Image (tube, rainbow, N blue to C red; front, side, top):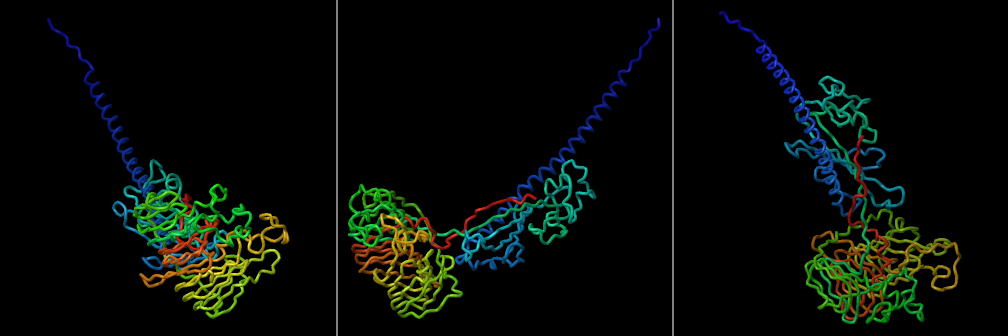
Length: 556
């Protein structure tokens, strides 16, 4: 009997299944390759996007460091260290400086170009004699890999993203990701950022750029305590003290003595300026801020200090010293040297006896005088005293030598005295005839005094008698050289001292109403120092640093 065989299609099904698997695998592999390629492209571009900002911020830091190098804000050292003068783009009045830093980052793929523009303030917020600076930094990150973006069909070679002109920055993801394949599309559209210098500029490699802008303004010194020295402190005298008061406080520490209200007569040296009554409200509020800061471990005291004390490496404790406030022995600090001011337009005056007239109407526009030294008796008179609305005057005096004579500052005059040499005088020789809370006459009704001046007359902007006479020690140009400020009895003194290179010596029993910055301080005998807290609300016109007040990224 013959057996019949049946044929099936199972082999064909297997072939079809295998073919389907192969096709699906090819599709999957192709998709994976495409996804991997585009992922790598995107990842590299994302990395470049972040690194471009890092490069821009590095350039901003370099520009800011250059600004901070200056001792004299009017003559910054931008021509050193590879900086070159650049055209000053409007609206900047200039000048401007630029520098390019390249070859840093992974595979040396980063670079930054920094431009620093010098500006002046037209609003009056910053004195026109002190510039501020705009720092613009462009960070560039080179892109490696294929010159395309994501899955955009416009990113292929020869497509519209590959070309730029002055009217177009590109399209699609090229524009979104700020990528330059052949041309710098920012320069083509915005030029230098202010709309100047538009040009079709080619790039050597595909790149991503990001731009930031910083604004650096001067930081002025404000007296924040009685004394700040960098080398050493030895004082006050055994019969003296350091404390504080507030010339803006209308409270009368001694109602029976109106002279005390105007600080014409100090209180007993053995107590606070506000007298021996510790329950006096003014005493409790204002007498305990006679702070002392020493930039080394060298600290010694005789009488009490009503305030805080800081040193750098000292071993000061409450048990071994008469200190009412807190103590911190780990506060390092420095005080930058003080450069000579610009004396263009100042009047030269002989060093002997004589009178000069101040007619300046503000601290930013004082009447200027230059002396070779002051040996005789000098008077700075108020040329605006007859002005019925603003009877105050400002003077700026530069002494290219020593001060050993008498200086009288009339009521209504605020005087800055800059000196290159030494000072050796009696406390009473520095005669500041101003009074607190109004230098001509107190305001109508102030402190119970009957109105005696026209109600239209403006009050003096400076409430502090001490703040009307300011001494600035110009640091010697020879390294290691110091100045000396020596103040002896008799008399009392109302003046501030900012002299970073000066050793300050006070002998005898003068009461010094002041705030002092110097190299060192020594006070013996009954020397007392009274710090006017009103001084901590007004800068003294000395630029000690710059600070960033604005940071923006140009996202165009």
